[in-house]
Length: 284
Image 1: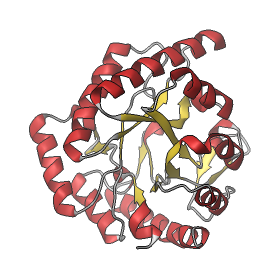
Image 2 (image 1 turned 45 degrees about the vertical axis):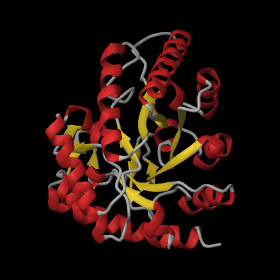
Image 3 (image 1 turned 120 degrees about the horizontal axis):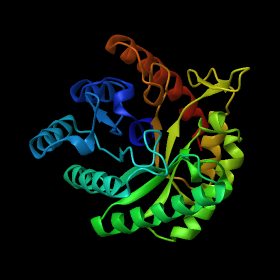
């Protein structure tokens, strides 16, 4: 089976708001999986038991697998001062959804600062990641920290310090190829330092504007070497998924989203162009 059919998926709400269309688009594209973040704008942790049961029925009927659920824990909607009990409640509820879907990975981040000193921010972020990981172990799920918003996403050094501090098999990494555009590091250099802990990959490309802001593009139109990162991963024996997160028509942290037709059209175009990249880069 080709890498496209077996190991490429995408974040559902980047393709469509509703679950049914999310599943249809990914299946139409020949993928075997879909990563879930929101359904009709609602986080998975906000679904009630009947809604989770319906979610499971639709996914089973689609034949798609769900490798990762994306939580808002520690992300751009929080800060290092956000109530931790609330975060633990979200973890508990998302873990229940994960078990219903036969999924074990939950995406998290490590808390943007809230005006604290660097030392205080680091200490509290590390404390929270240990508490959350311990709870994940109790719940029978595993956390995947993304190199995005939060203390550990600032640099590879911070990521490695977090992994060393928590020291748990229930904490591993998502590597997002494009996030370095926003945080000022080179994707391949970051990846080389954290590669042994990477279990899942998010696919983006783009460039930095003259004002220093990241602007995301189609996968073959940015300044990042997506193919180089894929070759680096494959050479190291990576067997995980490559998950599309274009951020072209749908950018949650900026509250930007196109109409459903535009969203689906741009996602399909993105997928088609990425297929050519991954097929070539992953060829033995």
